[in-house]
Length: 160
Image (cartoon, rainbow, N blue to C red; front, top):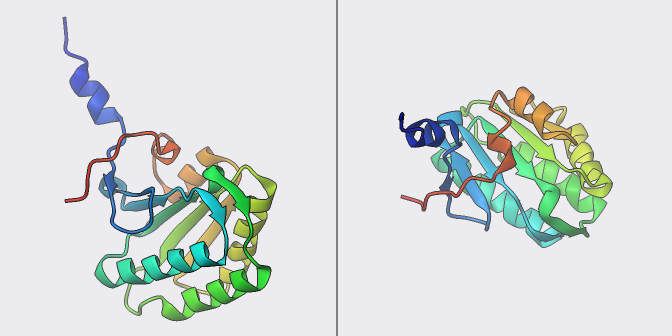
């Protein structure tokens, strides 16, 4: 009888935990960083995201990013803060780095609205291509990764 365990482990996405905000992981085989914030999306959490992105972009800049808002319990970010965050992201993105694709996913209308606002604000930047999605499979196609990866259901390995 053939051993299917090797086949199963190769087909399942493999991620690693990244230092930074909780629920942050990388899928090195797909040049993807994925984050699934939990709790309340407020001004301070948005600032934490921005600080982390600036830090990681100095050391390594994955060309694909996926933010999954499905675990948020509340959205309490001020609209003006989203504008400020987008402006800072455009200014702080390092020169000489490959442009990135950032997919923001939310089934919830409020989270999706924030994602759409960010997408619109980033339209003028050549370096950050942000898109809002309500469908994970469409986000996967746009990012060029298997849909299974964006489920974020694998057990990530510890950071090395």
